[in-house]
Image 1 (spheres, rainbow, N blue to C red):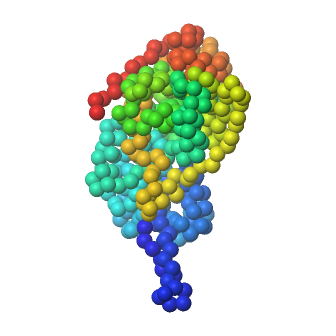
Image 2: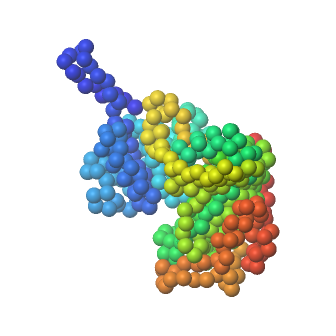
Length: 402
């Protein structure tokens, strides 16, 4: 980033302050609205300037600053805009790869929303593009900015809960019919041959998977030994809405992610550390950590670093990235396992209850709350638990050689 000079009583009193980072945002709807609010906060603080946005659908009146130019696409934006410090891409999953590659052709750093891309091939292409010449890419796993992760690392190292024996991620949310009608890619595995991979583990509850992997120390593709999937759907969609992903790290630690968007009610998702002498539960959307041992129960809520600010600090001062592209390699192996797995097995309607009316109706898999808990606790898939609707079998993903 450049600098701005403020003179105070002549040359001897000159104070140099960092100039506001020039930022472009691609995608102003959906999760793009979160970035707009965050950039408004940062612009008010004088640390950034939103100079341009791009979206095929015009932004809502007043959604972007009057000084920000509006374009229909990134190509038009880049042709008309120079000297960008940062480009943020918050667009549908299937557009991430081409937009990210275009952004990396500039001198700007890149903030790319999760999941990074829709296939391992595109991930490798992106890593290659980011390395020649080196460009920094931050991936939008916001939960990884939680200060609780450092506390978890310290408690594991100290043996507070004994030997770490396993990790589980549990997510149960509600998504209604309107959720799958909000866009043409929602609930799709692909569109016209282009990968989308919009499944419960790769999009709505992707943070549960990414957070569990980070706690386990699994960042890159070399950090995983195996991935198994068991995918189901209660909704009339292509992708999975109720699944178990069972992972084993290169050090042998089991990680089981039991996830659904077909619960009776939404609760805050959480990651559980299973120790030989206790447990720790991290509610990552709340940055809340609960520890239980023989000596009692403690709970603490932590702060969180903003990923946009972290990327700008990295660019200006070399501060380590919180959620780098390379460190999303382990997550991308999980996504690839989901992408290449057999199509999700429909859950027998006899085991699905519908609540609500019209587009507000949502599917509830009967007994899913208990099933998720048991899967995480036992590191078992739904079929291994003997659930009456679990007609699939675990599918093993062959991890490519490094």
